[in-house]
Length: 296
Image (cartoon, rainbow, N blue to C red; front, side, top):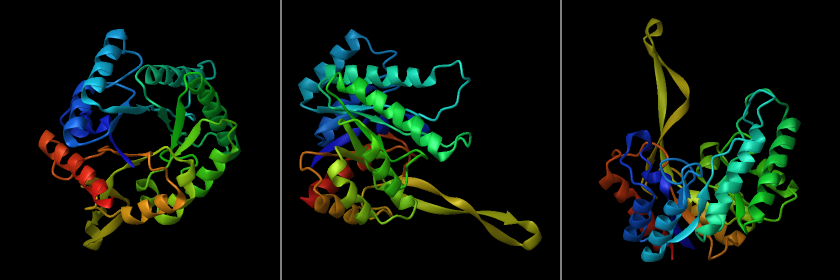
């Protein structure tokens, strides 16, 4: 299993310290990662901004460090609402095609996409039809460049593992893979071993982050007591120090036939225990490498 670093970890979101794309590639080398997954938006690799000079610099950084480009992480919402005259689906198709084209230029293999958020304006059947049509269209665009699509179990539609597997199995596209991660099923109370074992044959990579959950309360003065508020808040912590049973998850991947050449990609995509200083981010990113190596 190869170790990847997701560049969103050093994108500066949530008030954290940041690096540009070449800096993330060098950071991945220094911390012992085999590859990087580059965020396909600012400040790392937005198709809008990326020109030949940028591709050259990133390609040179990959070559000089020996770090492999896993692919680009796209940000899609195929249920995004817009007035009827706005071709929102076509815009996203062109975005994914641009990601695939750049990914291929840089030697990557995959573009990550999401399904869609539920805005309450479509029936479930209409949601399924729209997302399926969009994913299939984007998959055809990606295939023209020899690139896979990895659909991550993140957004509202088909986030449940059973529905996710059913949806992926319905697609008329040979280059679509499951981007199945542990943190979403964990937060929703699913069995991690069972899900991982079922999804493993369909996967190219999994994106990993460990979390602690913190109950929330609101004080009710008239009752001199606290009312429980849902859902809990979540904060990222070191791999193995959180509440997600990654031992069960990776056991499921192993038993399900997760390819030994597939990718386990680490992300810090939320506030992090200990704060957002570069030293703390590096501490967490290095802990993932140690955790994965410790499984060998």
